Image 1 (cartoon, rainbow, N blue to C red):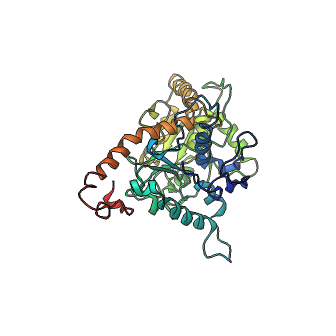
Image 2: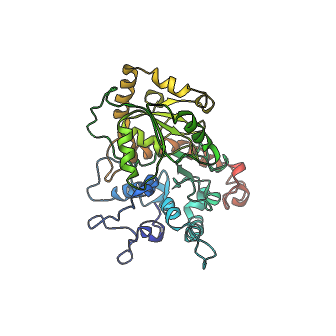
Image 3: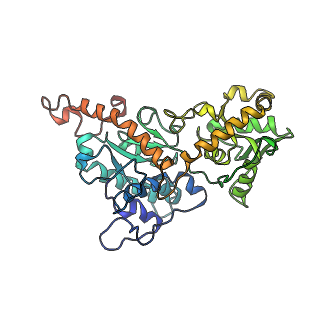
Length: 387
């Protein structure tokens, strides 16, 4: 992991280093990440904490990733830029600025990273960076694309820059309360279908508006506008905890935090998002605890209501129990624990390493017979000729 200056990571949390160090002292106080909707894209924070914790005299027992200080010993090189936080806090430009602070930071990041000998040696192929908010790293991504990205989805990326073969999909951090000691039953959850959120969305989110018109008058369906304002998170928690099925509908991008809120609530997700990519799907069968519906079918009169009403007590209970089993895979915490979201993400990255290494080795085939300039190792290759 690069020792980037604090302005790229914990400095964004108003943390100020003591002396020449660039990282917080875990023996004093760890800077807190802002709450509310900021938390849903806080993956960069938890992964950075976990790598730093691996260097402690008594590191946590759960360690899928460990920091080393010799780049030749590293499987992958982590770039600790809190890109989602930078976007959320600093993307707006004031009248006296030519560039927002978010864009300024991205420019500085690209300049710093591409100047490192590790980047030049591999062309960035063995680097890793988190850009979980769909609009984070919006400028720098075109320069840093040879690296592996940790993303929420591919909705705002061309396939030459980010794709399922190269990159890693990570879960959102759920923002509603997890259902602890859930003893609910099929009959104790009176609401059949639950959705609360923004209804009028652009791009692929048109389906929310159409479904609102289809479902608004169904007696056992809750489909309403909602936000984090006016106790919205607590109301959503209560609504999901008392519902059998929770709708996860594409919005501005294919994914949303609503899926992970539903998992934390043990409310069986009904996913209506044709282009969604899901975390850990190479090792986890989502059909065991989610229902997938094609958009064209969901928009048919009575289709969703009939589908969910025909799922009986035994089938629903089986999925409800499975949700309780997999819930830990989506929990972010520090220190991390075996099988939690932090460890699952690192394991997903580890499964990318052999492919990264193979492409890196292939790029070196002719390095002895042609110049570095001809192999492209002295510059960042264009997306069209890399993957």
